[in-house]
Image 1 (spheres, one colour):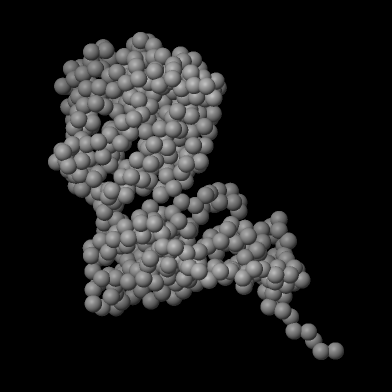
Image 2 (cartoon, rainbow, N blue to C red; image 1 turned 30 degrees about the vertical axis):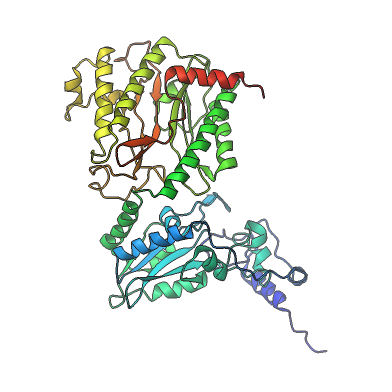
Length: 509
């Protein structure tokens, strides 16, 4: 009897069974192999593979619409192109990260890659390839989408469409993101191999995003660092679209704070506060922009208290430092310190009003031409004077503020500002002379967030203040003539906060 020729699906299955032991190694997003089940999966038999490859409705051939605001991302690529004429630029987005075993954290694209493309898919790489006549060709390497033509659509638990959802595909990505070219990721290794060696066109890589890309292209540490720096410094000045996206994230954050206040009357734990706020972030945005700080009582004296495992107690303060990351990935960063019972005590109000005055003076110092550190200096003068008047600082404010002393920092701990945008601590690779020691310019967005933190065991602090932590934080846009507080609608004055809470608690729902 003639030997029956195996189907394509059967051949794939046979190969998979030969290669896959009973206990499978973990699959990572950078793995070359596909269709490898996890240790608790079964290998699909040939009959099932054949059955799964038939009976699907043909996919439509219409390309996806171009992404909204694609021209803004295109302009950013052209700006970057002008900074590095004649050089190849490689910007990966990164990969999904393992949370435990074979499960992954939700993917968040690399900030610089997203800033240049608007693409949210993992594993992609943007290359700006120099053209002979000047400028660059944009090449976007993306995951291919074979549709139902390959068994991996249901056998590959890392990238298979029935496991994690569809990818756009190559032609679709070119249409969607408006790049000059799109190519499949399988072509990337060969392309990167061609960038090796001293005789080829100079190449810069955004390092630390993809181990595969880092290993494939010869490292030039200083040159690569200059690329990261240039991207950060491009992002220092926000355009109108970016400001609108920040305002959207701030508005959602405002609603998230009101959700927390509604729950606060009956809340019993910091974790409840975190959960309530984070729900708003997922309903109206992509996620939270950073780990929510829901610090009640003396936990407010720990700057980045994200354990959120403490109790909510009447008479104490809740320091809520939280921000919604919008669907465009721009994040708010707001802090309000709320009296859990609805009213500040005398001592709480004293400390709160001191921090508020420091913030007001710092905001007044946000104007173009001022040093980035000027708002910090203005705030610290107020805090040092106030701490002296309270009898906490024993030296004069002038002595406490001297560079060689900085005694006020025992109670304030941190500076009052950082840049804000796609990252909560935005533009981190910018040069110090362009950021920390640079001048404020119209279009920059920064936080202004003074605080005082009196540890519960600090014997230099009167007992009545120990355990009180207060921070007030707002997001501020530098304008041509001064600044605009983007979060100004979120109450800050102590009386306004008390009225805000009272109003929310009186609502009929």
